[in-house]
Structure formats: structure tokens, C-alpha cells
Image (tube, rainbow, N blue to C red; front, side):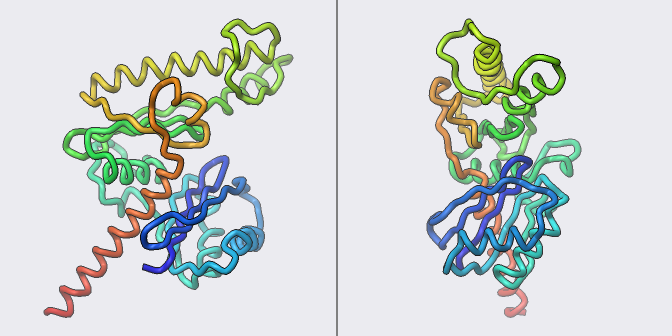
Length: 260
């Protein structure tokens, strides 16, 4: 397999990773900008890729406005359309009532989690939103939980109040804040920590599962104390596994046609 470029287009960041056949050799992060000129994105990718050749591009996107832009990026970088991961082409069976509403990043996380860690499994992704994705004992995507991330909550406090400042989220030293900034950080950190503990305990009971992993930009803020292992590039790995499964399916079909 030629080098594969996996791209996860999120609401805050676009995370990209370049894979050889065996390993992830390079990663980088760009700010998500919906109105950015496609040529600017192309320039950024050429800069990060340098002389590395790309054979194929696979994408998970939760920002539909950027899909056409990244088709242009793909055609420029590797001369072909990208493969988008969707609920329609994913290899997972799902119990979701409206599978078209599952974010492609959540599907990618589930694909990687199931392949690497088996079933049942709980995956927590600490991004713009915090999502819990659950794989049941049958290996089905059972559903999960979505809640606003700490950055959204901090922004909401600042936007919808007259005097509260915008606070950069960090772990406070004490639960009792002595400044408004400290009070907000305490609420965000300890409030979210308590909520996470409650949700994890109840998900483990409902799913009958003790296997939990995490990913996402804010995972390390919480997971050390929660004793959950963090896999920073789980979504990119899921995209790689998805691409490989699609390629194998195409190769098997081609072999079948040749035999007949």
C-alpha cells in the first residue's frame, strides 16, 4: 500500500496523519476554518508533507462545508478523490436508530477501538464535544453520550453573562477558587470530573464492560486521575483500518470477477 493520508476534520481542529503500510510516520494539526481558500489548505498540506508521496486520502468529517474543499486538496495532493467514511460504507453494525446522525469521527473511533481492544468497549473522545461511544458484546455500535466540551462551556459562560471572563481551561490547585477565573476553572475541572465518574460508572454497569479507552485533545486533562489510557491518534487509526477494509473488499471483488 502506498502512503495513506488520514484526515479528521473536526469543528475546532483538522488532525492529519501520514501512514506507511506499517506505521504512522507524521502528524499535524490545523485550525478549522470554514471560509479558508482551498489553495491555502493545499499549501499547508504540501508544506507538512514535504517530499512524502501520498497514494490515497481517507477522511472523516463533521464539517460538511469543508468537504468540497478537501476533495480539491485530495485531487491536488494525490490525483484522485478521497474516500469519505460515512455510516453507509462503514463495516460496523449499529443499533443507532438514525445512523446518518453518527459523526464520522465517532465511527472511526469505534472501528479502531474494536480492532485494537475487542468487545465490549467504551471510548471517550475529548474534543469540542465530549463523546462516549459504546461497543456491545456482539461487536455492534450500541450508541453513546454527547455533551459539550470544557471549551464550549467556558465560552458559553463568557458569552451569556455580563461580567464573567473567558477562561483558558486548566486544572486548578484547589476546589475553592479565590478569583473569578479560579472559580470558573474549578467548576469546569471538578464539575466535569465528577460528571465523568458518574457516567463511566453507569455505562460500565449498563454495558457490562470494564474496558475503557480515551482519545482527543483534552483527554490528558482528566484521564490520568481517572486511570484511563489515552490513545491520541485513535481516530486516524480507525480511518486507516477503514481504508484497508474497503481496499480488501475491492480486491476480493476483482479476484472473483477474474475467476469467473
